[in-house]
Length: 178
Ligand code: FES
Image 1 (cartoon, helix red, strand yellow):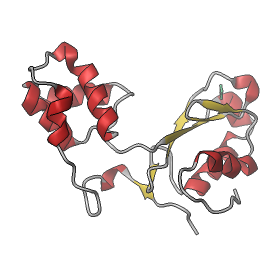
Image 2 (tube, rainbow, N blue to C red; image 1 turned 90 degrees about the vertical axis):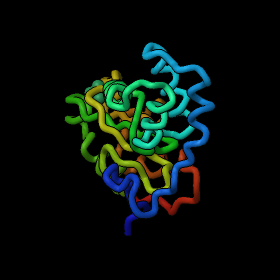
Image 3 (cartoon, helix red, strand yellow; image 1 turned 120 degrees about the vertical axis):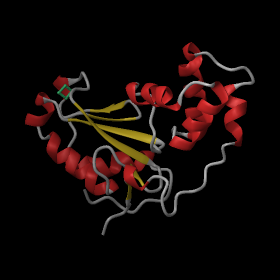
């Protein structure tokens, strides 16, 4: 039975999604109309507060700054540091590069998908973990490699996935069987 249900990007803003309180945006943006050159630090501040930059927040920033929302979305979608969907408190990256692939990265990825019940690009329903795949983590001699919040786990095996993720999980988790 799956332990977690993914929060798929397309579910954002529907059904059980909590209403966003936009009252804090003004304080984060500041009283002065910010110039386009100030946009990135403003977006960083707002994302740090809300955890992501959903459409209503971007539109509020646009209203407060006078910068067109389309332009702000252009910046948000261009830079990897910004996200329009909620991300987990922990980011799991599983390398799928050649060195890792030939040493069993697919097994590691399958174990992570099974343990978290998410696919790459998704976040667990409890917002504990986001899963990403990457082309190389720069540690090919330790393949297959995965990271959690930037911490490297070398020569991974599927059987090690649940114990590793269990160290990072915020809530109570069931025992691993990856
Ligand atoms: S290919 Fe996986 S770390 Fe380089």
